[in-house]
Image (cartoon, rainbow, N blue to C red; front, side, top):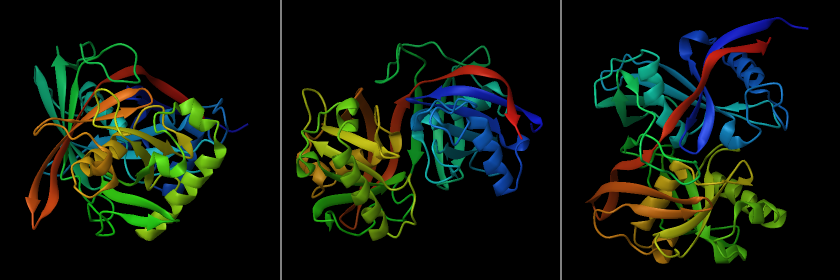
Length: 355
């Protein structure tokens, strides 16, 4: 039996995701050593992640690595990792907007920045995407506030409202808001719109894969044929925009007209399974597409009033996303995306890891 390594860590819920937050200073620099350590920490590969801190779901097998920043425009730096459950892989591609909501509270409570009341602005540099996020964190008596009245779909109860402002999110991975330069493309015989804002996302009509669009995650997970078709489309779409093979990028979502109160109804896949809510990164792409005439999302949507958020209906409820943009050469340029979230520290302590 190998030696046990002791690693300080914090388990946090960020938005509708959950994961382990770590200090970069406590981790090895060597990529191979780092991957082995994080797999052991999370208990991967194993469908139950029974011997680690992972939650046996892609939404709860996430990792945030945080450090002080030396950049003039940032206070802390964030590196997102996704530990695969059934394979010995930790992906450091793209980002997780939900986990991002925990970075500010973690930085404040761990003493990485000096807080001010009642709101502390935490400027976060996302290492994976090379983008800036301004997080507005409520503070009470020098600590990140937890209690509040803001509710998000997919999380029980309420919490202190955290506003995430993603700066210039267009073209985060590919360099272009519309990676192919077109509003619509045809991939594997289906019409799609491909948008890159935080994470490249392939958007298609639910009806084109014989779905209503308002199915529950459980209903969809019982339909392996359509999930396999969507996964094949996701991979083909990734190849079309020059992304190397990844289980995490691009994202894929299918859309339908909204119900009573939303702008659009949407369902997305993550690691081949239906997301129980809706990823922030995919949400920003969807919201931006709603506002771009000629995309599939715009064609299906009920457009919000000027200056209002785009409300995306998803399996757990809805997510509101504010998009600030301007026109340049008859094209939309994204200035920022604003998403309210909540986050909460669940546990802090020492992880005992098999080395």
